[in-house]
Amino acid sequence: MWGKLIQDWKHKHPGVPEKAEIKSSRLGPYYLLFEDDFKKLNKLLVSFDKVGIPLSESYIDVQENGLHYYPISIGQYGLGVFNSYHQTGDQEKKARFLKIADWFVNTQTVEPGKGCHWLTDVPKPEYGISKPWKSAFTQSRAISILLRAWQMTHEERYYKPAAGALIPFTLSAGDGGVAVDREWSATFYEEYVAEYPTRVMDGHLFALLGLFDGVRALKPGPEQLLARQLFDEGVQGLIKQLPLFDLGNWVLFNRCDVPGYPNPDLCTRNYMILVIKLLKIIHMLTDDLVLLDYHHKFSGYLKLPNILRMYRMKYRTLRSLNRI
Image 1 (spheres, helix red, strand yellow):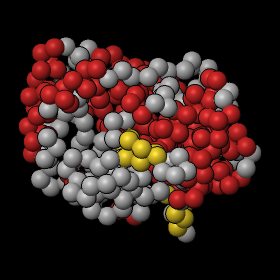
Image 2 (cartoon, one colour):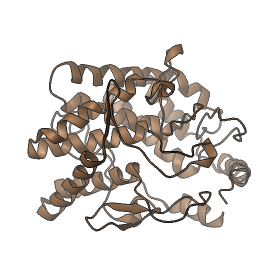
Image 3 (tube, helix red, strand yellow):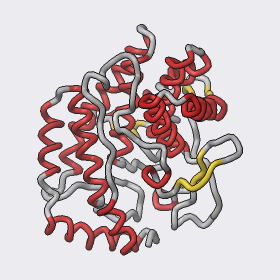
Image 4 (tube, rainbow, N blue to C red):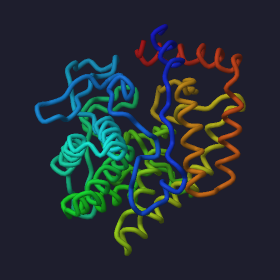
């Protein structure tokens, strides 16, 4: 737990590109300026396979040890490499980035009427997930990687799965998609698609960023219009759901309906800072003042008494989930 506390305080979040750059139809640096250094990206990224695809360790509560492919983290690394290539023009980094894009092309699953998706096969016992699972977060990473590769190379093999990755956003989690709460006009895109809604905040926020890459870069026509519709729907869902995440002095990590899951589950300080930054970015993309209001409101919660209260509650949650 002390290690988690130290990491929570020491983590430095990446910067953000200029507003004009994140609205251009030409996809430049990602909305967060990730680096391609494992130590600064994700503590679970530890190695590469023989062609240069990152491998991750399992979480502490997963019995099956060993390295595995985690698409969300592979995408994060790929965007870090792209950011570095965009800054330096280094051709070796361009080649590394395209290897990540090729991995997404080669590992896609296409289902009639359900578009294409990527599965993660590491279990998530806290959400009752024991078989390979879909993720809106993964879909968004794939869109962001593949559209950048398409603009870089003009090869349609990158474009087609990027467009197909939109379809799971149109479907409910129970019907093979990645959305929940559409029935009450509060659409939320799931980072972890499980039997019950899990509603992890940053997964939805990052999903919106991938959809906005679709708005910016897909060819004019039905696919670009669908990306806009899904993005706008997700933003309105976010606005409707934000009050349910707001505790008045802190913010929930998720709103999980899995039976037996410990509620409330508060976000850590580091995670709170990430959510605050993502709300500011999505405000930059939409100019929606509600999002700016929540950005300022949540920023005001970062006071020592609130942080100490959160750590006491988070410790109990992690203990009950066998995460410490």
